[in-house]
Image 1: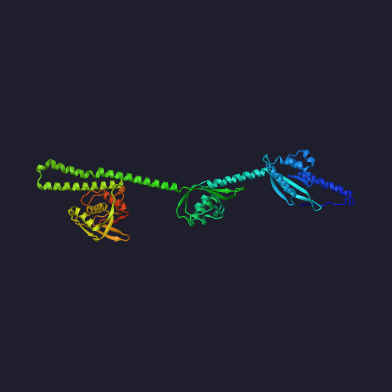
Image 2 (image 1 turned 180 degrees about the vertical axis):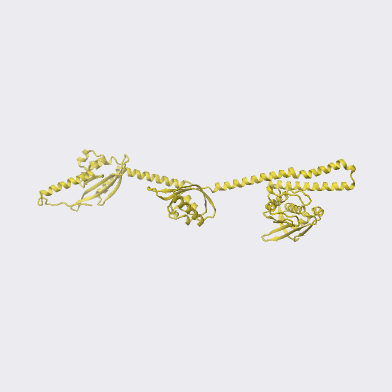
Length: 512
C-alpha cells in the first residue's frame, strides 16, 4: 500500500524555497511518468481520475477528451469496449476497487493484444484514497509463450505417438528426455523411471559398456553415428532385439557438446526376416545341389547296371544255342547280381525322392529290434556269403525301439550293405544295440573294412559332397544310402555319427 502523508497548516510552515523544491519534485515525477514503458493510472475512490501518463493513452488508445473529463466511469466505458470479455472485466474492477491488497491480472483484447495489469491501493493519512494501476503490453511475449507452448505440445505429441525410440542424454550419457518406446526397450514402465539414469541401470554390463563407449566417442569427437545396427537385451527380458540407431552430438550456443540425441528403430522383425531369407536361400542352394546329385546318379550310376543287363541279355539272345549249362548258370548269376544292384539303387532313389517330397509314410510304433534285424540279415545272407563275411548280432532279445519299422529296415539294410561293400573277403560285421537314458536306444554297425580318412568322414552325410568310391570288389557306390539313413534318423529326432580309420574299419552309431 502506498502511503502519502498530508501536512496540515502548511501556511504556518510556508517557505518560498520549499515551493521551488516542490515544483522540481513534481516536474521530476512527470518526467518519470512520461519515460517509463508502463501505462500508469491513478484513480480516486470518489470515481475520478487523478493522473494518467501518456503511455496509458497510447496503450489503450484513449482520446484526449476522455482523459480530460477525469471521470473514471467514462474511462471504464471506453476501456471495456476493447476487451474480449467485458463482463469479467467489470467484475474484476469492482472487486479491485474494494480490495485492500495488490492485484495482478491479464487483459485480453479483441484485436489480439495482451496486457499485464497490476494495482495497489494508496492512502492519505492512513486512509485508503484510491488505487495506482500499471499496464504493460506483453503481446509479443504472450504470443511467443503461446508459440513455445504449441511447439512443446506438438513435440510431445510426436514423441508420444512416433513408434521409434527418441531420447536425449547429457554429457555423462544419462537420460534427460525420452519417449515411451525407449522406456519399453529398457524394461521400464514409464518415462519418469528413465530420467537421470543410464544404460547401466537397464542393460547387462557388456552391452551398457558398449553403448557408453560409443556415445562418449560421439561426444568427444563431435561426429555422429549414423545407421548403426545395435543389439539390445535389457535385464528384465532376455530376448535379444535389434535396433537401427542414429546418435548425434548436441551443442550449446558456444559450440560445446553438451549431450546427444538418439533415434532407434526396432528392426528385430527385419533381421528375423533376413535370417529366414538366408536360411531359405541356403536350403534352396542345398536343394539344387541335391537335385544335381540326383540327376548325376540317374545319368551315371543307373547306366552301369543297365549296361550290364543289356550286355548279358545280348549274349543270351545271340549265343544261347552255343552256351553250356555252366556258362548259362554263370550268366544267370551275373544277371541276378546286376538286377539286385539296380533294384537296390532304384529303391534308394525312390525312398530319397519320397523323403524330399515329404510323402514317405511315417508310422512310429514299438517293435523288437533283434527280431527285425534278424529278418533283414536273412535277406542279405547271400550278399555276405559271396564275400565270406561273418555277421554277428549283440542285441538283447527283449530290447524294443519306437520307430517307423519300414524306415528302420531300410536304415539297417543300407548300413549293413555298405559294410559288406567296403569290407574285404573274410572280414567281420557286428550289429549291437543298448538302451540309453530317457527311453532311447543306441544301435551300432561295426565292420573290419577298409575304413575312411577324416575328410571322407566329415562329408559322409552331405549329399553335395558325399564321397563316392567303389567297394573292395568293384561294387558301385553313390553315397545315397547314408544320406537316406541320416534323413530317417532326423525324422525320428535321433542322431547318427561315424567313426573310422583307414585300414581299421568303420563304426556307424545312431540313436532312436
